[in-house]
Structures are given as structure tokens and as C-alpha cells.
Amino acid sequence: MVDVIADQKDIDFVLYEQLNVERFLKHKKYSDFNKKMFKMVISEARNLAIKEILPTYTECDQEGLKFENGKVEVPKCLKRVHKLLMEGEWGALTADPEYGGQGLPHTIFQATFDYMIGANYVAMMYVILGHGAGKMIDRFGTESQKELFLEKLYSLQWGGTMLLTEPGAGSDLGALETSAEKLEDDTYSIVGNKIFISNGEQNLTENIIHPVLARIKGAPAGTKGISLFIVPKIWVNGDGTFGESNDVVCTGVEEKLGLHGSPTCSISLGSKGKCRGILLGKENQGMQIMFHMMNGVRLEVGTQAYSHASCAYLYALEYAKTRLQGKSMDKSSDVKVSQVPIIEHPDVRRMLLKMKSYVEGLRSLAFFTAFCFDMIECSENEDEKSHYSNLVEILTPIVKAYSSDRGFEICAEGMQVFGGYGYTREYPMEQLLRDCKIASIYEGSNGIQATDFLFRKVGGQNGIMLEAFVLEIKKRIDYSKENNIFVDLAETLEKVLKKLENKLRDSAQSVKTSEYKSAFAVASPLLDVTGDIVMAWHLLWRAQIADAKLAGNNGGENVDFYNGKIMAAKFFIKTILPVATGKLDGIVINENPAATINEKSF
Ligand SMILES: Cc1cc2nc3c(=O)[nH]c(=O)nc-3n(C[C@H](O)[C@H](O)[C@H](O)COP(=O)(O)OP(=O)(O)OC[C@H]3O[C@@H](n4cnc5c(N)ncnc54)[C@H](O)[C@@H]3O)c2cc1C
Image (cartoon, rainbow, N blue to C red):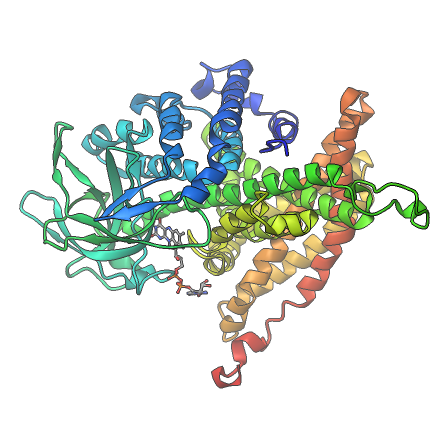
């Protein structure tokens, strides 16, 4: 079995042929870079991923974590990887160079993380959480908070976390009970219990910076009364030196299905009355501030899911080319004929093409979302900036929820290609499946993403985000019609898009009526079917580029590669997208049984 992680050719395609990332070089923010440098950073990420990170994937899972007396030991192999990530300064690729960041475009960051997350997501969780906490402090912190924390977080010397969840406050963070009280020195005394905290305690970094959601005594109930505090594991004095250990104790580590190298911790804050925190931003603005980090991490979770799926696809493809089983259909009655590789069987080819089209569509969506962030930063035109902001808003729940649902399914399909061997530990398929499942649960479960999608994104701001989204898809439909390529595919997409748009508008409207419960009952199917249309949009776009390359005789040795893009679009739009029409018919708002069924009737 060869070591296969992210698909290099597909990543280069999306970067240089689909999104033309060189365009960002014209912007003053990136004037110190050139295309060669972009390529060098990505190639270094790939080398590190293949040579150093990937070999830890199974080891991490099998060795697992040790928890004793409040201390967590992570798998040994992660120590070396973390050191290499520190030395290579991989902790802050898009962050401000003033604080040790690399100042690279988000789209380039996406490419590097496609490789590194694909190699071992658990190793990268330590980077993602530190980077996310740093970026939040950069955006909302005071100058002295930035001075104290940013460089250490970005350099990976210190780790980061997110302390949101409590036993009675998971999806409903407004119910949290952790409290905060202002002390004389303007710090806050924090008391509470958090659960399920990723990397809440670990022995990889010398300090851990915990962003903690808590309610200041007397603050309003619900999300409006939540504030955000920076709670260092070891107190950091004003001059940057270490003070005492803070009253933050890891009281347990979960036994769980996957991600065995990442401790999921219960954390007790202030059990001795001595946990101190520093307010980030203003009092009662904790949720808005935390959303900054959560939205970033939601995109990483989407990347986690499609990266697992991409690995599953590449492993399955390799296996299908070498596993001999059964005869060719043309010679099935001939007893002397030898067995053929399973890739020759139509059903196996169907599974592989399904996997390929989803993986490439999901990758394209994630890169496009990163690209939208770059356009917001680089565009000089205010209308264009708001167009891309609207796209980021509406695409974020889709990247998180649709990628995680499909990512898991693709991992399962990959296991199916392996037959019985896929179910065993001999191959990485079972681990990929286990590791992928959490993506639909954490960072706001997919049910919560769907509610956000329908209520805030589709129905928000008079539908302006939905308009930006539809406009972007129509661009690709119009391109097909104007250039007379894949007109049949474009027309199929156009029909489903029209139906989707009507359904989304009706549902967003119903949220404001007495039918609101029915509308929320269909939020997940609506997000799901929107994701199908997003896949069709991206695959059509990629087929259009591939067709232009082939027509211009630029295909060269890549003819099969470009044909593969066209076949993925045809397969998806002709055989999967029609199901979306049926799915839309099944989205019933009037008296939806899921909303009206009596609890006793279950
Ligand atoms: C491995 C792992 C790592 C984690 N890491 C972190 C971390 O680092 N920091 C952190 O703070 N938390 C973390 N979590 C917690 C995670 O974010 C929560 O588990 C998640 O938000 C769901 O909360 P819950 O488990 O309480 O489920 P519940 O909120 O009880 O939800 C159960 C089910 O009900 C649905 N549901 C609940 N409320 C609604 C609603 N209003 N509308 C529609 N559906 C609803 C949910 O979608 C879900 O399907 C982690 C969890 C795990 C398992």
C-alpha cells in the first residue's frame, strides 16, 4: 500500500487553473511574495506531511493518551511532529507578520493544510486551536494582550483551546453556568466546569491559553450575558514572565471512537477559588467574539472531513487497481481466464467515481471559501467586498455540515471498496471512518448549522446572502450557455437551482409564521440539498476549465486528468443531481410530521 494523502494534481488544479491564486500577488499585502514562493511553501507542507506527519497517523491512534493525576501525556510520536511544526513556523500562515505570522493568503494556507490535515488531523488540531485563539486575540484584544499572547501562540510554544461546552450547555450555550467576578486588579475570578474540551490538557506545549465563556455575576441570562476570558494554564505576568499555575484542573479524559491522539478533557475552573482570567473585548460580547474563532474552526472541520474522505478515496483507488477478484464481465463464463483487478467491475467504478466527484467538489468548495476571504481582504471595491463577505457567511455552515456528512459517507464507501479488509485494522479505512464521524457533531452540530443556515443566512438581511450565492452559480450556468459547452448539464443545474431558490425563500418566510416549527424541521434537508447543488456548481466549473484546456491543446499528457474532471461533473449532474429534485419534493413545510407528531406517538 503506497502512502497516499491529498491529491497533488487536484490541489494544483484548484489553485492555479480554477482560482488563479497568482492574482493576489498584485495586491500590496502580498508584494513580498511570488508564485515560486507560494509553490515552495505548499511543496514544503506536502513533504512534511508525507515524510513526518503521515507516519504518525496509525501510531497516534494505537498508542492513545495517558491520563494520571490531572496530567495528560499525548502519544510520543506527536512530540517530534510538533517540534517540526514549530521549527517550520507552520502555526500562523495567514497571521500578521508583526506577531510572527507568515502573512500568506488564505487560499495558500488551505492548500498546505489540505496536505497536513490529510496526513494526521490530530497533529494539526494542536496548531488549529492555537492559531484560532491567536487570531481571535489579534482581532479583539488590547495591544498588551496581543504582546503577551500572540507570538507564543503563533510560534506553537503555547497551545490554545476553546472552553465552551458544559454538561447542561452543549448546543445551547446560553444555558452555561460558569461564572466570573471582577477582582480589584481588573482580572476576573472564574468558577465552573467545562466538558469535552479538545486538547484541554497536554504535555506538548509549555503553556495553554484557554478562551473561556462565562457569565459575569448579574449579567443577563442567555447568550446576551456571556463574556469571554483568556485563562492561561500558567499565569502570564505583564512583562511576559510566568506567574503561578492557574486554578485550572483536568479532571478526566473521555474514551472515544476516534481522534485518539487528542485528549477530550473535563476541566474544572476555580475549584480552589483561584482561577483568574482576563476579559477579551467587552463584557457580554463573548458570543460575538467567540464566533470569530468558531467560524474559522468550522472551516477547518470541513477540511478535516473532506481530507479524511480524500485519503479514503485515494487508498480505495489504489486498492481497486491491485486487488484481484472475479473475472472480466466479457469473459465470465471462461473458467481458465484469470481474475481481474476489482476496478474493472462497474459497481466498483461507480463507487470510485462517486467518491472522486464528492471529494473534488468538497475540496473546490473549501478552497473557494478561503479564496472569498482573500477577495474580501484584497478587493478595492466595496460592492465586491460585500459580495464575498455574503458568500463566506452563507457557505460556512455548508462547508461545515455538508462536508462532514458527505466526508463520513465517502469514508464508508471507501471501506466498502476494500471489502472485508476495509473493516480490519490492517488498512487505515476503519480509522478514517472513526476519525471522521466527530466532524458532524462538534463545532456546532450539523443540526445547529442547519438552523443557522436557514434562519440567519438564507433568511437574514432580506435574502442578500442567498442572492450572492445564486448569482455565483448562475455565472457558471451562463458561461456554459454562452460558450456552448455542457449546456445540458448547465440546464439541469439551472432547473434544480430555481426549485431550490424557491424552496429556500419559502422556508425562510415560513420561519416567520405559525409554521416555523415545520420550517426548522426541514432545515437539515434544506442544507443538504443546497450542498448537492453546490457540488454541481463546482464540478461544472471545473469541467468548463478542463474542457478549455483540452480544446486549446494544452491537455498534453494531462488529457486523462482533464477528462476525469469532465466525467466527475457528468456523473454528478446526470446521476446524483436528479435525486436533489426528489429531495426538494420531500421537503414539506405545511404540517411537516416531524414538527407535528405527538411525543407519545414515537
Ligand atoms: C471529541 C469532541 C471534541 C470536542 N471539543 C470541544 C472543544 O474543544 N470545546 C468545546 O467547547 N466543546 C467541544 N466539544 C463539544 C461539542 O461541541 C458538543 O458535543 C456539541 O456542541 C453538541 O453538544 P452536546 O454534546 O451537549 O449535544 P446536545 O446539545 O445535547 O445535542 C444533542 C442533539 O440534539 C440536537 N440539538 C440540540 N439542540 C438543538 C436545537 N436547538 N436545534 C436543533 N437541534 C438541536 C443536536 O444537533 C444533536 O443532534 C467536543 C465534543 C467532542 C465529542
